[in-house]
Length: 270
Image 1 (cartoon, helix red, strand yellow):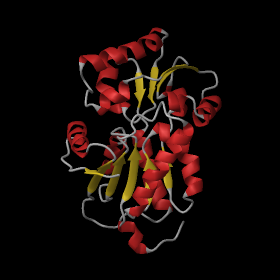
Image 2 (cartoon, rainbow, N blue to C red):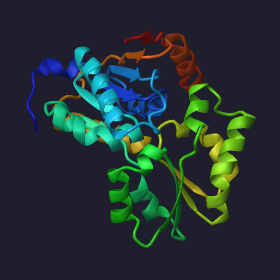
Image 3 (cartoon, rainbow, N blue to C red):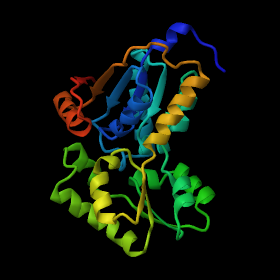
Image 4 (spheres, rainbow, N blue to C red):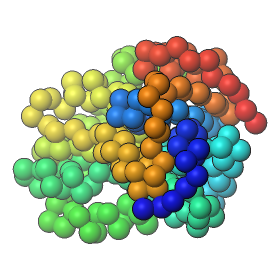
């Protein structure tokens, strides 16, 4: 177990995403670790990350980590599948003294849970084109047919707060119809934005389809890594949550309240 100054335990846990998607992961981290102080940064000036180049995503996420470290965070959760796929290895090499937890599409549990060998994956084009995703499918999806859709435009709709309207439902029907017609019995949510439209996905897919959100597993991994580094908060008081954005702070505050039901005043940063 790693040793640390005991005062490190009270430092906040940093969480980053291209936008509001990582709030779906923050929600589970707060439930599992209620005494941790959380500091969330949304790079809404550059959302979505999916169409961006590998080099650009690495640069953007590196800047977000620098900001979090300036706030004295003790660990960083990369709550973005695209950023994890493009930059997690790079971030661990660049900041070797920082514990990181990343996201990855739940291909392994999807392949394990399917009953008929047909799995749908919803993720961004950046995730689908990454080496990390190719490695996951090659390793864990042998004998499984994987149907993919990048859900173009869905992140932007969620960032605009349109999580349950007719336009969002129409887009999801276009994305899901081919894989549902092919008979998938399991759908993996490979972007942290997508759990916010889970009710619509469930409505379209029906009760016979299993939908996998990796966020609860990421929260459990966060707890494990904090334990490994002796960084779990020993404060018995409820943890505080602070939101930062490279975009519109009022928009992030509104979205956080709409998506999570919590009233937090976000702060804009450059």
